[in-house]
Length: 289
Image 1 (tube, one colour):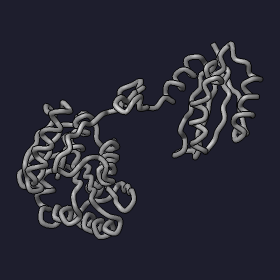
Image 2 (cartoon, one colour; image 1 turned 120 degrees about the horizontal axis):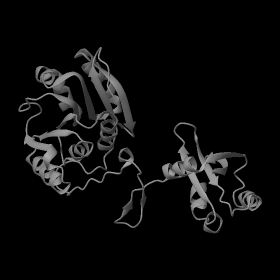
Image 3 (cartoon, rainbow, N blue to C red; image 1 turned 90 degrees about the horizontal axis):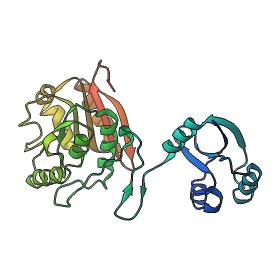
Image 4 (cartoon, rainbow, N blue to C red; image 1 turned 90 degrees about the vertical axis):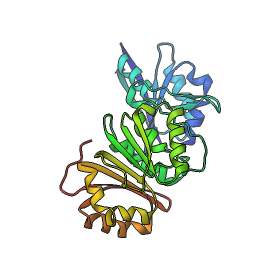
């Protein structure tokens, strides 16, 4: 069975809210809003016409209620295709202040929830460096990886890596951080995938890792390449990805110089406000994603 689809594009986000509140119109049709702002600079509205829908009435309503929508196209899709597109357009939404509806239709789109007990350790997820590191960890971390969370704080990145399917060593010099991470991995039910320990950087680390995350201060990050260079080379292999954060923008060039002089190269840089996070690897090696 073929379904008629009316499509149009727009750039104003407030139109989405108006569409979603337009109950009288959309009670008789299915619709999907696709977010293509990053790739195409626009949103796309697809309206799937049911057998009962009156096409002329729909166009009249669109012109009257949404004068910003100027250009429409009509195409036909197989029933299975439009239903799949509609499902893909659904986004997570807070049902109440305590309940999040996750419409993920497959495992890779599933929403992960990290529970954190506030304590004296750094890391609540509110700071830019934590979010930036998490973005890179999500991009490069994969199921089966062995990950080191160096300076684990409250354990947010440790828990995230475990939920991605990694085995994790989490370490911190701060005893409050060690205890906070142990508590937080317990309440997130990932204890079987995580080992937590006290260590001054790599002092007590004797394994090799696929991913290393270090969301710590600039001066401490430099120590990894200056004072601990030999130890660093012993905990990585040729395909290890290292993710560093805790840097401000003006520290990027001098830190990049330290990284490159140590035989590494920057493969990705993310920034938010005055903060940045980078991913690096050994020079002359390929990245396996």
